[in-house]
Amino acid sequence: MRVTLVHNPDAGEGRPQGRDLVKILEGAGLQVRYVTTENNWKNALDEPADFAVAAGGDGTVAKVLLAMLEREKPVALLPLGTANNIARTLGVVGDARALAAAWRVAAVRPFDVGRLRAPWGDERLVESFGGGVFAETILRGDKELDDPTAIVGPESDQAMLLLREIVHAAQPRPWRIELDGQDLSGEYLAVEALNIRFVGPNVPLAPEADPADGQLELVLIGEEHREALLEHLSGRLKQAAAGPPGLPVKRGRRLTVVLEQPFPPLHVDDDIVGRDVGGLEGEAARFVLELEPGAVQLLGADAHVAREP
Image 1: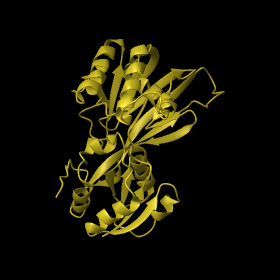
Image 2: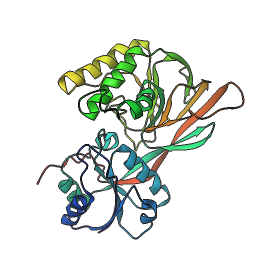
Image 3: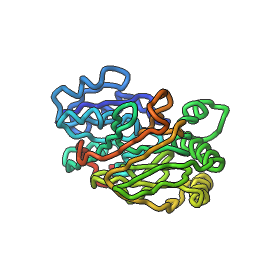
């Protein structure tokens, strides 16, 4: 079987070398075309291959999945990042050698992709769209987590510490929200529409989410949910494990959000959006999010937990 391996060499704290990944895949009987995210990798996806392999964190996985929207090939995941929220949702964890060996016989599964109609144009997403405390963490984390003197400890702990600080200090703001015609407007610390189970530093906001069911999981975090989220984050930091924060989840197919300017921090997947938009007509901006069911195909996304051979 021929594969195109798209590798982000900066992903993960261990940062495996490309030659090591090629050796692992070749050891599983695969013919490998290797490219990195630092060069013209999208063109490589047009070359003959049975499937593509996204080797990196959530950002790399999302980019490869979106690039495959126009290409009729499945994607296999080799999670190398810090959070790996997409792979965790799908149960794709474990030893890289066992994962690669399983691809030869793994089933192909559909994966939904979101389409967000925003004032500045359309956005595609794999993970989530939202605003508030998680978007603020992305915005601040780009600067503060790159400062080695700011917070000590592993990158995942740094992100949770920053998120806990932001949740503690956050003030609710008004949101106009409609999900499948139901008015859910109110004041929230955060609004998150998810296609997967986790957001940020592995926070399981939607633990039952299925990215192949054509439905969004909407989590509205109000003042009454602040303590539960803080307890979850503190438990993770103290004991390295904690149950889900247990926030209410609503499911639907079409989400409409209307926001007054200035916007709160907004994110699409791991990218902050809307910060450079000015001069929009009127005082409010409208966002509409829907999923495209089964827009891409995943290989081995069947809750396979790989073990070392």
